[in-house]
Length: 521
DNA sequence: GTTAGGG
DNA sequence: CCCTAAC
Image 1 (cartoon, rainbow, N blue to C red):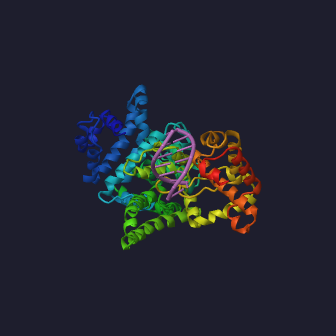
Image 2 (image 1 turned 180 degrees about the vertical axis):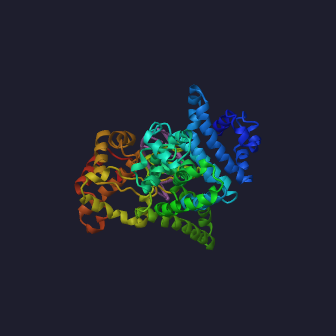
Image 3 (image 1 turned 60 degrees about the horizontal axis):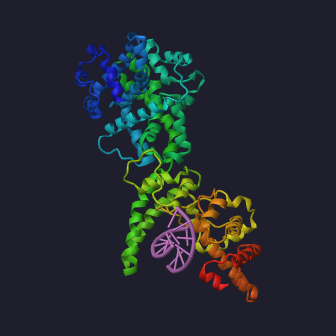
């Protein structure tokens, strides 16, 4: 983007009379690698120039349109597409007046949303954020419903801009969007988050509604985008006239102008701020400590069960409870769930790797594949009930309708990406398993898995084997209970219908299971 | 990669 | 359900 900007600037001779100050910038525009910092330092060191620069941007943005030939127009189309947003960015970043408000707001939001720190030079950070959001916009611009040719948008904007020349309005047209004359101002505020491209709104709203997939580039583009968009939108609506008239008193006026919309909109966006930090944040927060703690504990516990492990355990509990607290919010429906566990988890597992929007492949064996459909949330539910209660649970399930049970059982994953709690075997699953055993015989677990549990990502062959083993035990228990004895003691074994256990017994005679169990019978 | 078996 | 040895 920077590159494009530079090109753009270099292509514009008009700059000269306007901004001698820019020489330092423009002297070496051909260099592709002019660092953003250089670019940004400029703003940092001289706020006023920054303001001037916007003007120039606007200016040559417009002049460019007039002067260029058709081809050049096309050539620069890309650049020009970006421009509006850029202009906005600069406005947004103008260190005086508006931007300070924005900064506060942004900082606030950033802290609330992602725990991002903007400690040192916040304005620089902001610039980065803005530039990133630009990238987002650029990339999002392709598939969006382009409104460029929408004349109504232009007219509306012209209304806004008053005596501004058409060129500018044309360039703004890109992000002005649809016939907003019919929108209420609130709607516009919400609509305008799409500030460059209509489609951006979708991105943002997606982020809001299903933060789920946020795991990907949450901390990067999306966050900044989502945070910045509303602002830029407001800046746009309120700012354009002032900016383009090159007023001498843009700051005070802008500040007053901007304050209201921002404050007004804070109400609507405050909700977002209240949301919990993204799952990724939670994970990163809780994971390193708890993991390392686990390790240490494993070492420490056998040797001494003194105080140290305990203390550490408290620490861990603390961390976990924090996570849990937050996630209880989540389960309360307030926050967003994170269905794409894998991304989140792997990110946190390879926690130091840059957060990229790519899917890492499972680094271990098939047992990890369930990540694909992993949902983090149920793990808490399971964590709440004592382990042993699981025994009585199947009973309920057995009386339940079988249909809704076996599908979509969710995988519960521990922090280390491992399944931590039982996914109870449903009756239908057991039936399937039995069918599989009767079909393939005992021991061909992978065949059975492929054939009868193709869709259940959990239920690895090992799981089938284990379950069969348990079934055999249960059937043995059934036999013994049948022999006499009080049956209540064995009830624990039989959440399963007797018919099933009987089948297990039969199969066990037909397909002898290795060693002990067989001899047991 | 799969299976058996212990934990 | 996890882990690991053995195949």
